Length: 168
Image (tube, rainbow, N blue to C red):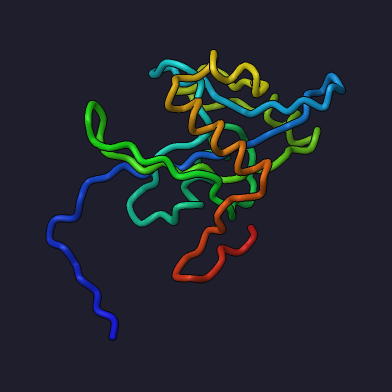
């Protein structure tokens, strides 16, 4: 028998949803770069993403932020990493990084022409070797872990009530 318990005062926790999007460098070197954005209000570059709204499905929050910030609409079905931040100087948070995959040259060109919202200074393609200098330490670790999971195919499938999220 299953029972549902509803609390009168649910915990406050921030839920962030980000996407790892990669492309091959156009110079033909076959090196990969990750899509990062430069927010106007924080230090360092970050993955596209943001907070989920009340009642919003997790992967749809990531997809909404990705589309708004980069112009990309990608199916997000795999979580590459989960990063828990305990409450200290910032609110407690749980940040999920989804696999956006490898872009085609056409998709990468569309990103280049996209006008991001005013809260974003610009979009950048950064090779893996440049991530440490471009990001804060916690964001860098999150991206490195997600990239490793993507390379090794060790992501977690996203389920809703035990059912895999459909493509699209």
